[in-house]
Image (cartoon, rainbow, N blue to C red; front, side, top):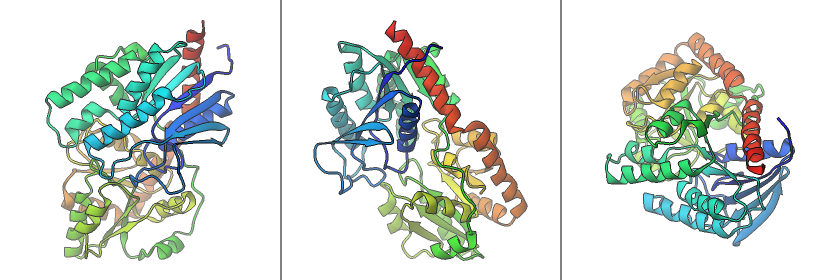
Length: 414
């Protein structure tokens, strides 16, 4: 392929220093493409996730900075105090309106990160109706129309309307990148998008290989007793995680004098409610997000790493925490529906076991089974590390994106 430097604009609501969600992947993609010689510009929001509050150090209307060779423009937008569906829509539309009038830098290719879908739609209007009309890629990290149904809604007018909107936006792009084969099938079958425009590139492990740490010292520092079986959940505490199940499991573990103790690390819109529900429990603790090195040490020091999903969540997202978990050498317990995307990832990687979503007794029993079987735990943890090296390579993923964007940029430049 003839190579030339492209002007690439990446438009997405989330970017570093946000530690979770799609921000680490957007950041890695921008820096990876810049390292390959492209002129990369990012238009993003003010850091607010998962706290749902703009950080104090970010003030003003627009902030410009350069991070690792990438020019970053931060656009202030609404952040809902309570992220309901209407609140999220308000946030996305306010960000999308900022994108309509911002300086994109005359790009050859625009990469739109979804979520946020509504701001993606507004940016698509500008890209398709503007003077230059660059190549447009939509990078699908979550499926909105499935999310409405899977987080408690019912199939009906709202979900059908969202599916039509999502299909219209994705169908208007010159290319769509899905992070999982299940996403790609849904986009084709349910959203009626041409399969020829879709590529599948998995999210990668954005953490470096973890250095060996003294797990006993880490556990002591975090207040974890060596006799306890520590089940650590990291990342967002939102609705789709269904962490009420973990509160119930912790209560059951306490009542049965189990060695299992749960730790929820991170933040999210459900954290306060979960802390209130867990008040008085000794088998559940909450920990704020940690810096990268301490975070990786905590992963390695746990006995089990936990993914927990709301019953009914099957197709809407791939838990980003799995790519971090697979660096640790620690087995995963996934409380998820049979046949879900998450259950497929656990089976494919061989890195853990699945228990039924919304079943506290099954969750405690699954964790106990691994905590009492160190040989199996070690085998599953090593499987995760091998899966990371073979399937979740950052360099391989960035190379795929580079080729895809190059082909689109050269085609549009003819």
